[in-house]
Amino acid sequence: MPIREAVSEVLRARIEGLEFSEFRGRTRVVVPAGRLLDALRLLRDECGFDFLADITCVDYLNYRGARDRFGLVYQLASLASNERLVLRVPLNEPDLVVPSATGLWEAANWLEREVWDMFGIRFEGHPDPRRILLPEEFTAHPLRKDYPLQGRGERHNFPVLRRRDA
Amino acid sequence: MPLTPISDARPRQASRDYLWTLNFGPQHPATHTTLRLLLQLDGERVVDAVPDIGYLHSGFEKIGEHLDYNQYVTVTDRMNYISPMANNVAWHEAVERLLGIELTRRCQYIRVIVAELARISDHLLCVGAMGLDTGAFTFFLYAFYQRERIYDIFETLCGARFTNSYTRVGGLMHDITPAAIDRIRAFLEDFPHTLEDMERLLNRNRIFVDRTKGVGLLSREEAIQRGASGPIARASGVTRDLRKDEPYLSYADFDFQVCCAQAGDCFARYYVRMAEMRESLRIVRQAVDNLPAGPVNVGVDERTTLPSKQQVYQTIEGTITHFELVMSNRGFVVPCDELYTAIEAPNGELGFYLVGDGGDVAYRARCRPPSFVHFALFPHLIRGHTLSDVVAVLGSLNIIAAELDR
Image (cartoon, rainbow over all chains, first blue to last red):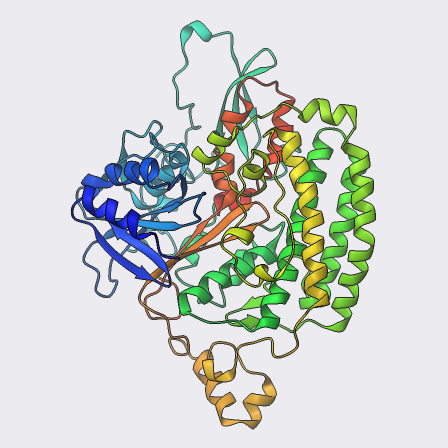
């Protein structure tokens, strides 16, 4: 269901530059990267969106009608009213940096590490900014659209042990 | 580029040099799947734990950008392979919401039946393995025999025991058969007795209770703060169940309860899972008794499911629909938009964030795996407990590495 009028009014009044849209009964808000933490804190503390379900990213390279390269997506939910809200942060190269939400939700820790791993978006203030699924030696961010399905390159860089040298 | 072992995030302090570092996994009988933990031990007490994941990373989300909406269901089987049916249902629920397809009542009921059977199967594995790790081998055998029977039911339904791939966009692979219904009814008849036996084995078992009560405490505030969902959150007193809170499929039709506990320890998580199996049985019984008649797939005019062979050969609509669907980039009408849909999978909130771009392949198919969020809880839960509690906490979280790493 769409979010309450009161919530969108509070958001509009306190944070400038928001764009609201709706699709299949879900409300989405586009937030500029600079106001992300303010928006998240406002939603958590004053609007009851106390559950961070997911953080993910979409690479809009070659997407029809896209204005920005990346869209960082925060899925918020309210346990009391069962509303859901999607926050989207447009990001463009070269400044792929957003403030980390780990101070607000501990759940953001691994989710942000995964976004860094797969998309190369840095989270400023993250307590443990390492890769999570791929090895530290990996050089690329494979869920970007310019990364091929068959990742050539990385595997060739791995050291090869031959039987006669071993 | 050298391959170095991944070091602990925090540098070692010289004053704490007496601490042991223990490497737990990735191949260890008690991790059940490919997990690796770096434990810092003070004697037998765990001072810190650093999970190291990614051993089973297979790029499922990248593959999702190259397989179409029907093909990808085979990959979802391999995410949480303990309850593949629930993943199938979650995936196609997300696709159908994005495409705006309204399922038939019969299809909704059958999906509820298979999803709840998958929940029982998943919980049986979780509590069974937890019992096994804490020394209750008989309990494990009781659980696994019943899981085998659920596999038999799935085999009758779709021919596959393990990787079912049962759902399709707008319908199912096959309609449910009377033989499958007979098997489900027989299971409904017998399983409560086994469940009672299992409860008698462990609920008041001194060894099991001592090893799980008060271990791995998670308070309600922390559960919310750390994104816990499903039985783990409910064991900490979070009354959230997407089947009730955001009713999908036909869950609004059924009478069932949300099982919660207050304690938030390993025993509470075990207890909630045992209680949920009973509720799932109630749902399955109601769904089987009231199974609506009628078609299982959406109509030919909607052009989303492959029509039956009879329709293809004998009607022009059937032929055209078949042609449109098997040709690439025809058939599905996909909006250029994005949507997050979550269902209550056995382990917690299993969501898919789909971005459609008009083609029949998702532009982005993000999976929100419950195991991933729950494994991040692990260091918090184990800190201060003993080494032998590691397996109890791991067992109560039910971490499935294939879903964790995708």
